[in-house]
Amino acid sequence: MSYPTRALDCFALAKELRIRHYENVMTARERGSLLVCGGVVLPWEIVEGFGEVEFFEGEPYGSAVAAHPELAAASVEATDAHGYGRDVCPYARSYWGAMFLNRTPWGEFPKPHFAVQYHHAHCGTNDKWFRVLAEHFDVPYYSIDYPRLRTATGTLTLAQLERYTEYLKVQYQDFIRWGEKVTGRTYDDERLIRALVNRRRAQQLWGEVCEMQKTVPAPLNLRTLYALMAPRVLCATRREGVEYLTLLRDEVQERVAQGIAGQAEERGRFMHDFVAPYVAMDIIKHMESYGAALVISLYICNWGGGIRDDGSWGLIYPFETLGGRPPANREEALRDIAHWDIQRDSWLKMFSCQARVSTALQFVEDWKCNGVIFHINRGDVGGMLGVLNARAALKERGIPTMIYEASATDRRDVDVVKVKDQIDAYMESLDLKALG
Ligand code: SF4
Image (cartoon, rainbow, N blue to C red; front, side, top):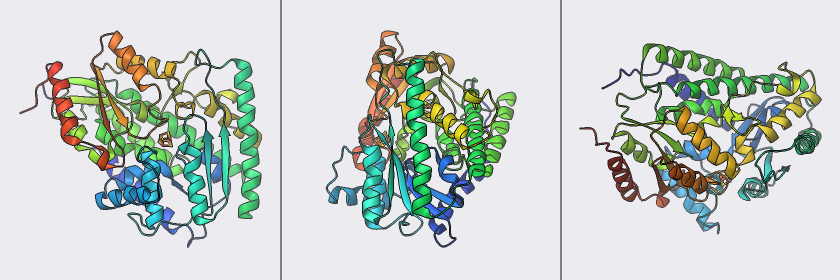
C-alpha cells in the first residue's frame, strides 16, 4: 500500500533561517555584534545576555559543509596536515580544517571575540576543540567544567542533583562576570530570560514534532527531519526560531490528521541511531529504496525531549524548578538552566549505558519500529557511548539490528559500497525487497 505524500511548506523557511544564521555569523563583526564560538549544546541563552551576538557553533558546521564536498574534503585533510589523528571527533576536524584554511562555504573563517565550551569528562574533544580555536585566533576562552555524573544506577540522588546543579550554576555566574570583563559589555538579565523562555519553548515544540513521528505512516522522513532540525539547533533562543517551530508543529499536525506520509512506502519502520552520515546521505536513500521508513533517531529527539526521573525518555515541561513559571531574575534563570543541564539534557549526560539501553528499547516500542540501524560515526567518542550495549540488549529481545561504520564529515571514512551491501543483507533478512 502506498501512502499520499506532499512537500512541506516549512521546508523553505527552515532553509532560509539556516542561510540567514550563517549570513549573520559572517557579518557579525561589521555590524558591531559579538561573535562567539562554542559547542552546540551550550546554554546559548546565557550568551544572549551579552547583547547583540551571533553564535558560530561547532557541530552544525560539519553538517552544513557536507553539502560542499570539495571544501569538506579539503578541511579534514588540512586538519590531518596539522597532526591531528583520524580518530579525533569528525566535527572538530571539519571545523578546525576550515579554520586552518581560512575558508567556509560563505567566505573567510570569521575571527570570534571569544570562545566558550564545556570541559566534559566523557569526551576529551569538547574542551580541546575550542582551546585550539582560541589559541589559533589568540582570543579569550572560557571552559565550563561539566561534572562527571556516572553512578551505579545511572540516576542521581537528590543530594547529588543539588550539589551538581549548584556546581554548574556557580560557573555560569562566573562566566557572566568573565564575559563582562572580556567584552566590556554590561550583562542584560532580561535578554537572558527572554532567550531562555524561547529555548524551552523551542525544545517543547520540536519534541511535539518528534512525538508525531509515532503515527503510522510517519508524517516526515528522516532526511527531511535533519533539514527541519537546523533552525531548532541554530535559532532556538530567538523569536524567529519559535515562530518557525510553531508553524512546523502545526503543519505536521495537519499531515497526521490527513494521513500524509513522509515517504510513499513504509514497509518497515526503523530507528536510526545516531548522527547522520552527512557526507554520504546516499546511504540513507539506499535504506529508503527498500521502503524502510527511518522514523526516529535519538540524535533528533535530543532537541525535543529529555530524561525523566525514572530514566525514561519524554517531553519535559519548562521551568520545573519554578513550578512552571518563567524565571524572574538571573539567579532563578541560571539555576533552572543548570538543573536542566544536569538532570534532563541527554546530550550533556552523554548517555549513560543504562539510559542508552532503556531509550533504545523504549523508542522501538513507542515509535513502533521493526528494527534499529546504528551508525558508528568514526571519532565521535561521546555520541557513541553505550551503542554496543544498546545493540546487545535489543538483540537479546529479538529486535533485529544493523550496525555500519561511516562518518558525519569525512567521506574517506565511508565505504559506501560495503555499507550498501550490509543494508541489502539486513533488509533481505527482514524480507524487504528493493522497490521496483
Ligand atoms: S561528543 Fe562526539 S561530536 Fe561531540 S565533541 Fe565529542 S566526539 Fe565530537
